[in-house]
Length: 283
Ligand code: ATR
Image (cartoon, rainbow, N blue to C red; front, side, top):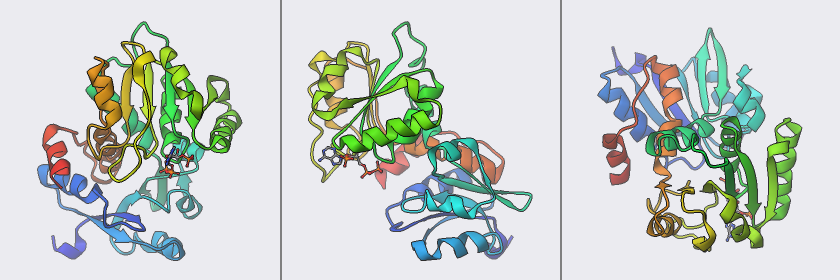
């Protein structure tokens, strides 16, 4: 097959140069000896509509969508799957019988990371209570996924108005009775109750301010996870580890969210393993 007629898959965003998605998908394509190529493409907001309209004619079979297009892309697709509908955001597009389908796999990626790295994390005898730090775009699919797994959720965010609108959103979706808010300055108070602590803020990332969190009141078995994976072991995870709490780093969420898209495009389910982790960590 010539390069021109090979199935092509994209990730679009702006900026896009930092995206690790090509490394993930091209690794799987090679590992499975498939024909195909996954490319990153800078698409400006004013060009989103025409890109989506034309991609199939250009030989693309689908792709990923990242910032700032995750919400806007929904206006241009034919079929919006329920998770993307609930979250008003999609990260994965594929073609089915000539129609463009859109779904959101971020919540799946979050859950699959915990399933892989802390098996049984949602099965214990402890009550299922999650404390979520942050109410930005990254928190939504995580909360949505945790509601699917039967968790009660407490959300806390520096800007209280954002927490309120997130709680309102889940109320509107009929999933609000298990979601409550807490004030940012009170975040420590809720540690004793939590069986899961998730940082969805950018705090603790390289070149960002630290996340100030004293874990002294954390229950001994509380699982701690962070969506920040640069550094891989954030201060939050180090602090939790030192106390003997179970921890899962955030890299796996990035890797696992890619799985459903790859399966849609290439018809074969890829595996998230240490080889892939090492490739991404080395990059
Ligand atoms: P995304 O939508 O990708 O999650 P974002 O909207 O920039 O990104 O959200 C980043 C998160 O980090 C938010 O919860 C933000 O809190 P605010 O809503 O108050 O901005 C949080 N965050 C960023 N810098 C922060 C800081 N210095 N202190 C506390 N929270 C911070």
